[in-house]
Image 1 (tube, rainbow, N blue to C red):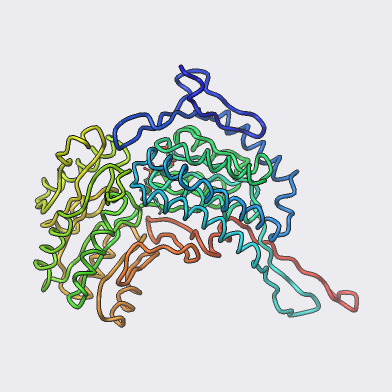
Image 2 (tube, rainbow, N blue to C red):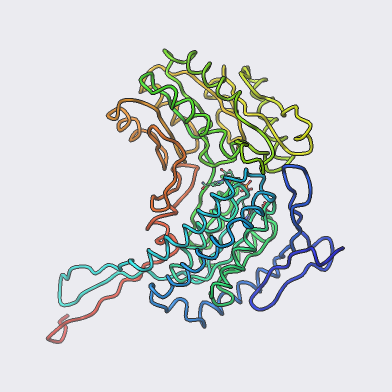
Length: 491
Ligand code: NDP
C-alpha cells in the first residue's frame, strides 16, 4: 500500500489515514477506467468523533453567535477561494465523475456562486417582527439546528455539496458532509477550502464513506439534528423513515422522470435542441433530465425525424475534449444498468430509433460510454417510462390534446420537473399549473437560478433548496415575546 497517495480526511485537528486496503475508497475515472484517486474511508466510529467535534465547534466557537454580516465575510471568502482554484477543482471533478470539461468548470462556478449568494443572504436577512395585538411585541427568529448531516450523490460533486453546505453554514450550523463513494474527492477539497477561508475547525467535516455504514450512522446519530439528502427515492424514503422515528427534520431531493412536452405550435428547431439537451446533457445523469418526451400527434413524425437527426450529430467522447457534448456514465456498473433498461424497453415492445449501444470507437473502449438513445412505441405504463434510468435514454410518446398530456405527464410517482414548448403562453400557464412538479420550464429547459427554489412534488422529495427557502431549510424558528405592560398583568 502506497500510503502517500491515499488522501486522508480530517476530524477536528486530527488527520485520519487509512491503515490498510480495507480502509480505502478508490475513485475510478469513468473515461478510461484508470484510478482517479484513493481516499481514506470513514467508518461509523469516525462519525461519532466527527459529531462530537462538530458539537464542540457549534457550542464553543463564535460562529453561531456572529452577526450574519460577519458570517458573510467567511462565506464570500470560501466563494473567492473556490473560484481561485477553479481549474484544478474542475480537473478533479472531471476525473472523478467523467463530466465534460466545460460542465466541470460550470460546477465549480456554481459552487462558488452558492457561497456568494448565501453570503449576500446573510447580509440582507431579516427576522420577522409581528405587529402587536396586546401589550407586547413579538418576533420570529431563524436559529440553527446545531449539527446537520448533508449526504450527496455522485452526479454533480462540489455543486451538490455547496448547495447544502453554504446555506447550512449561513444559518449558523456545523456541517458533516458524506459524499458519494463514487466521487469522494471534491467534498474533501471543499472542507479544506472552508478551513483555509477561516472557518473554525470542526464546522465542516467531510466523511468519505459508504452509505450503508457512514451515511446510515449519520442519520441515526442522536447528535445529528437535521439531515439534508440528495439521491435516489428509495434511499430517501429509508432516511425519511428514520428521521420520522427520531422526529428530526429532513430535506429530501430525490429522483425524477420528468415529462418534456412539445405542442404543435412550438418553434420546432428550438424545441428539438431543448429536448436533446434536456435529456443528453450530463449524459442523462441529471435528476431533472427530461426523460419522457410527449409530442403532439399532428407533428409527431416530423418532430421525431428531426430529433433523431439532431441526436446523430451529438459528439460523444473523452471529457477533456472541449468539443465533446456527452461524456461517459459514472461507472461500468451504471452503464450496465442503463443498457439493461434499454433491453427491457425492447422486450416491452419499444423501438430503438437511435443509440441503444456503446459507441464503436477504440478511444472510448475502456470508458463507460453509452450512446444517446431514443425509444418509442411504448406506453406510459412501460417500466422504461415509469422508472428513473438516470442515463442518456429518452422515451417518446404521442399525445392528442392538453387534457391527455396533463394526465399522462402526471401519471408517474415522481414530480421533480416538467418542460413544455409552445407559442401560447396562456396554454403554458394552464398546463404548467396543472402539472405536478416542483419546477416547470416553458420554452427552455434545465435552467437553474441560485435564488429560485428547487425541490420535488410527490416521490421526488420534501423541502426546497436554493433561494431564501434554502436558508429556511437549515433553520428552526424561535418566537419571542417582549412584554410592554405599563400595569401588572391581570388574570
Ligand atoms: P443513492 O441514493 O444511491 O445515494 C446517494 C447518497 O446516499 C450517497 O452518498 C450514498 O452513499 C448515500 N446512501 C446510500 N444508502 C444510504 C443509507 N442507507 N443511509 C444514508 N446514506 C445512504 O443515489 P445515487 O448516488 O445513485 O444518485 C443518483 C440519484 O440521485 C438519482 O435518483 C437522482 O435522481 C438523484 N438526484 C436527485 C437530485 C435532486 O436534487 N432532486 C439531484 C441529483 C441526483 P454511497 O455512495 O456510498 O452509496
